[in-house]
Image 1 (cartoon, rainbow, N blue to C red):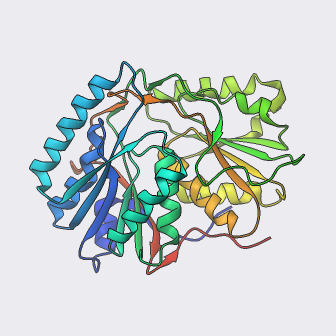
Image 2: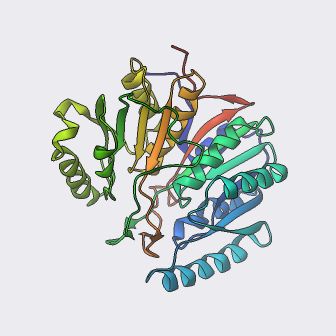
Length: 342
């Protein structure tokens, strides 16, 4: 299924296509990873940075804490050198729920301009899913881009002690009773207690979105993820249930979700364990499906903390610039990601 054209490309290219927009506001994370500072710094070089609101998200206390704190301080110093006083930092807690996320979004919306870039490179899902909900719904935001910076490589240990399967804030289960939801899983590097969902409910069908090609040596972890799912006889996984999609092809992944779920009257459950760009497709699909009156929920098994070396470095393209994928979600107040009703 091929849907309408939705603008997507390298950030520098997409900004050129939107040349009538003089400056952008960035909402992102001040994180341990080097790529957390890339988008603000690149906009600063181009003279297109209006201001930057960064969330410094505190994990639960683990052995990672010291290294993460040191790396965050270094990122803050680098930002101060690169863009001066154009950024502000707000402290938040990783396990925040709606009582914390709602006022956060309210405050951000009061301050934002009409041209916003949501940089999800280092934002946890419970934050960027909810913020994307609010930004797409906001009449104040006319132009909305979402960016993902590609790291040089991923670390060996990404996180520890994943939590139980829970629905993400504002994307909780909408229906109760004996419905049989369809389960769609974005394949990642770690299944993080995902198998708990097999015991949660009987599923009408299961589909896996498999990122291909995956950044080496990630494909080994991806296939190990698939093997763990396939071994669960309750899922009844078939070869045809594994659907390959490019890890940065948000628009294509959105169309695949629309096609796979077109005949699903009961609820759809989404499990975003794969690349950020596929997670982006899932949240955009969930928001679009909601408008048709059909139930959709998104769940995850949230780790309490992430390694300071979750990723290292930033991948550079042939032109020597950081590889930053940018997705145009709204232009002149119109969303590019919508689906027709049943």
